[in-house]
Amino acid sequence: MLSNGLYKVFGANGLVGYINTAQMNGDAILVIKDGSGVGTVSYAQGKFSVIGTLNYLTAIGNIDLRYLYFALSVFNFQPYKTGMAIPHIYFKDYGKAKIYCPSITEQKSVANVLDKLESKLFVEQGLLASFNQQKQYLLGQMFI
Image: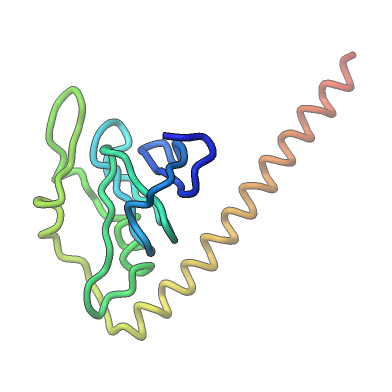
């Protein structure tokens, strides 16, 4: 793995490096399959690769991938976990689970609203981090 390759490489902790050959070209849902974050999902776009701690899922047929991402974000992976010391989940097990999927029009509508809410949440989290940093700076200036 490189620090300056062309394509992102994702692992359980998010972006872990770059590589010159992409494994995937398009949108996908990334699911952590091993370790303490097992069952955590994220969304990746464009050309990218993943390491062995992740599965990537794409949609087939009349399914909106963003809708599926939001559904899996609240999906309970607990019944599908195996292993005591290091938990694992396997697609062969959780892939059989049923998830409610309305019409494609409604899926797109729900995904659009949740996408906007998620974007707003990220903006607000960034603002909160900035305010906390400013607070720490100002407190530090008070007690010189």
